[in-house]
Length: 213
DNA sequence: AGGCCTTCAGGAAATTCGTG
DNA sequence: CACGAATTTCCTGAAGGCCT
Image (cartoon, rainbow, N blue to C red):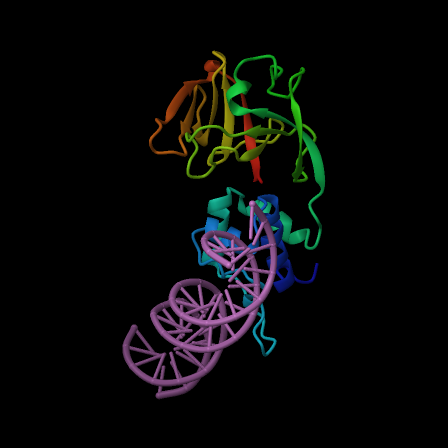
């Protein structure tokens, strides 16, 4: 690969990121707290043909707002022009997920009762969709949002994760850190408490890959 | 290391598009 | 038809390069 970052790749990656969330260029900018015109076509090239680039600050804000990591963004850059594949994933409401019978011991989707939903995301085959209910994850995820989750994805500190406890509780939070004995979780919504769980209280951790719709 | 000066991304205003 | 969302056009603040 001769060029690492081309103008077309960067903008295509930004578009692809927006598409994953069902957002237009202006919608993505607004979600990131930027002026809605920031990513418009007309802002990508000036009349004299000069190429315009998004600032690193804007990209940082978009990654912050979407929860995508730099590695995921760079994967989109490398996959310039590739349309995300539409695939059908099992879907369940966050509220129902804790009831039991929907997951195996490792957190993989199993059993009956799952709906199906089409998502614009080439997530792995083990991924499934959760419909957010309530405001406990605001402002990042709102009631009715769909998040794509994978129990097969490796989790690192700072990742957004869904955790099932042995008592049947389902938590969606940010992974603060994992120690030998504990798992520390930070709430998205500051109105809700952070949690520190003992390792043996955790039945599985799945990483939130994308939000959609 | 400091000041000037050019460049340019992003904001403001204006306009068009889309949808009930 | 009205309202909001999306987009274009124009403008400005400030970042950053260059030359002492």
